Length: 563
Image (cartoon, rainbow, N blue to C red; front, side, top):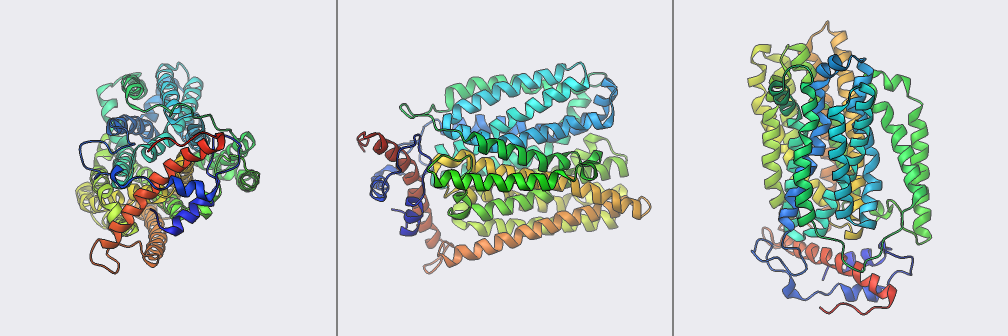
């Protein structure tokens, strides 16, 4: 049984039901939280635990490949912009929409798509999003003009935004206990390496497909991968349980959230073309719309409806609010450093896009490797893992900034490899553990909207960082007579400051965990406290799943399914 505090917190929730019938009584939920002890064999055993899909790991790999492909498209296109602009004969502002338009619609779709997945089935939304992504990739590759290319990229971003929240929600749905941490470890590795390796793969593709139109293969490469992924996803991702009714969609909430997110993100994604100065008035309008969205969601909850995003995820779910805050602040620095490195290496040192991408490969390798390991350790060490990781990021990026500012340019690439590797290892201990810790107490029925909101806030942080770090880079460049090393070091200093802020958030949350007795080894030897908590959390997650279905049956007067 989960601890009484957890049960009380869950029982007080209006878990999003499939209907508008009254929510189940406390006794109904408590009755559903008593699964037989024999149902949970060790996570690493060969047979699937009862109630879990035996093909869950195969399904995970399919979703991770698709997630890698969609996240890669955020950064891989940047290296092709010069050749793309030359071939299509268009202005820099129009070409910038090829990158920023994708990021904009990607961020807009996350929360609504997550809610749609919760209500109508994550498999269905995943397949719809994947088909749309493949078709839009083909359209982008074949676009005869810049305007049609931008339109295809806007649609492709919407499709990617439909896919992203289904990834984290399917992990919540298919995995429990320590297995869930491992699955999120692979997910975190996918996020980290796809962001960092985009410029490298883009440079390789452009080198292989040289000449006019070579940039089109950056989009075409998604088509065969997407088709194969669709065939596998149809076979491996489990269907919605039979008999479940569709939920309701809060259309006013979707419109308020979409309008608010659009007006806040638009100036940020257009920062390189003067969007911050030209569209500053969007920020107050966006804030008003987002406040109105929160108030509307509170009203929907009070009326017993099904919100797009339940505010009680922030106020009543342990770990969610600090996880969202930490992820937002961390991505502010993490997302901005890649453009800073590209500007420094390509503009300052005259390197090719491929050389620039290879220079930051140590960070990508360290991040991906550490994320996989972190997935196995997060249930044991909890928030302490992200605190250690953020310490590594701060030290690694600080060391990189010092090296760039002091060593001769001709040896910079080799000199920063150790510090970037340290920062990457630290980063690997941040992203996937933070996702796991933020979502581990979220009811499975809300996994899509909760994961979508988490990623949306990360997008906000990333958009701010992508605008702020290059702006500071150019500001210092102008003030120091084109001293590129100092400009790069100053921009990296902002990333260090963001990582320090995330470290403070993580340290406070770790301290809160220790006070609640969730720290490993508390009052009973190394690992004893965490092992007890791990069992509690695993039971808690299973209780979520069973309680959701039990509540649905009670609301329709059906008998509970035999245990």
